[in-house]
Image 1 (cartoon, rainbow, N blue to C red):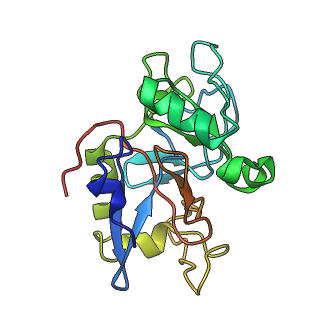
Image 2 (cartoon, rainbow, N blue to C red):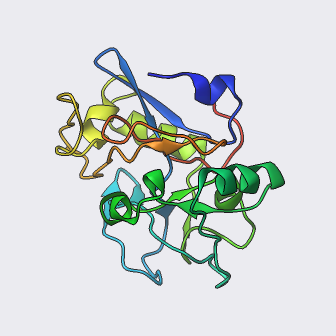
Length: 196
């Protein structure tokens, strides 16, 4: 598993779950909340005392209605990140990937004060990810329970015991390069530091 997320100091925070001696990184697509009143219907599951969506975030507007810029090239993705502008894209800038995995968002969209998560929901903190992992038995086994039971390459499917449906949507790095579709997913945290 690449460690460049931490070496490059990407503004992409993650939860790290160890699974059978492999580290699975989760890119934010799921949002945590306390209310089910949202503008777009998302399937959800209660895990412990938390409610999580069971599908990837797939929105084009902030909570206040403003459009999130759709970036369609590597150069434009890099430019948005260098300027600190919010953006979203599809994996490999191909809308067919959006049908299965939803959209990929940069840190500036996740952290924007206009709100990426739908009304009544929020981007989970690192502590909320840790609580989820701990409820499922800790970071050495929770990854298997969170991963969907289909769609992962190289016999990497999980059990989906938690009904979370974690999918291998891959990641786009700050400079607009993609990696890992089918092999891993990385989920956002709302804070700029990780505590593991």
